Length: 203
Image (cartoon, rainbow, N blue to C red; front, side, top):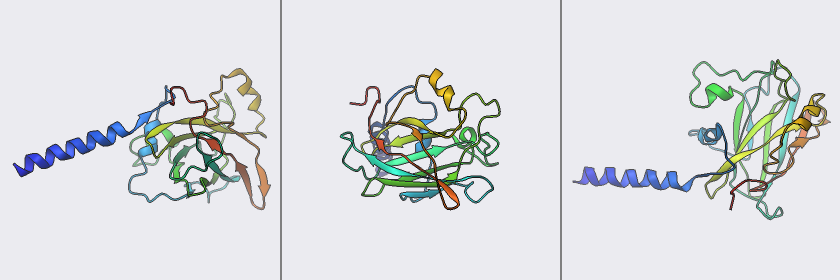
């Protein structure tokens, strides 16, 4: 009897957790990857696996704001992934879940009390087809359970940026084009994000 009661309570708990999450801004292929950080303790800073490899070092940083665009949003999880220097999403040999599709160069942060986040990585390579400018994919998970993709990070100095003019941009979370600034040995790209901005069916 106690065993059955424990199973019932566990199932109810799982259902309650699942109902807490709300996917917004459909369609959103791979947004579930935002949950794949496992047992890793998230902080406002993450270093992606490629950072100490050859290539242009990049620091992405900024703040996440609530819907009013002024109040810092703490406890927000940001997930990013991008291509390697060859422009490919190459997975690790033991990759599971979305890591098999998104490749090994991915990471997660949780914003601090000031809404701040920082990623250390390399500027991504362009697809071998050169079909679009280099970019970094991102998904956000709010403390209230809403999750959705953000507009990709693009780079103002990318010679292929003109190709964006022929695409319909989502502008999820605000402007995604950043201007990299050389600071010592790395490039700095700053982007602030507004939760819910331009997200369909957000409210």
